[in-house]
Length: 215
Image (tube, rainbow, N blue to C red; front, top):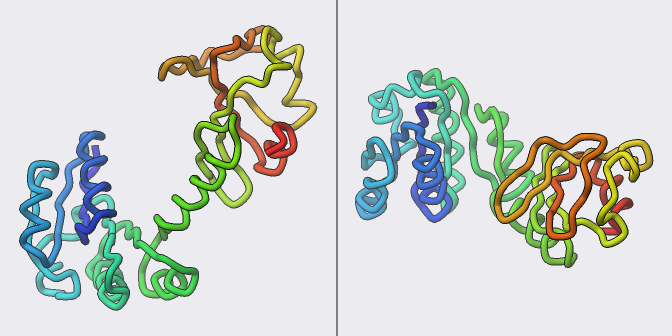
């Protein structure tokens, strides 16, 4: 369990708060608008009405005590930049800030952000990949060159073992798990047979995965 300071309760911030609740983390949520704060109260440990660009207010929250501080402000970049900078000045351990462009990201990183998230861009990439192919069910980018794909078992692979296919040697990718009806099977071995109704979680270089599955 981690303690997380979440600043900005628009749609993005609200979804973060609700997911963190599912994961059983302790969340302090902050926003300038009373209505947003009241709406999120059932999903967080605590919430306060306040301005993230106010150093005195931020200091009163004890930002040093949080494992992660997330700046989810999306409607005012100046406020996001000032909040990010103040958090770092006040001793925040890890500051994660939202950006909508590379230019914003550069400014945020220069002013204290440890990491950047691009919700619109990341969702756009996921949507494009997910719905441009009939056999891709999910996609998680690990870095610029590697990703995990959830892919339907190709017809030509059904009934064959992972050893027979030898895709690690041929394509330099790994089958991490099989999935059926929402249940993961992580016990994947050389003699594991690929059934018709399962999907595979495949890890590797994005270019190698695209080549293997003709994405």
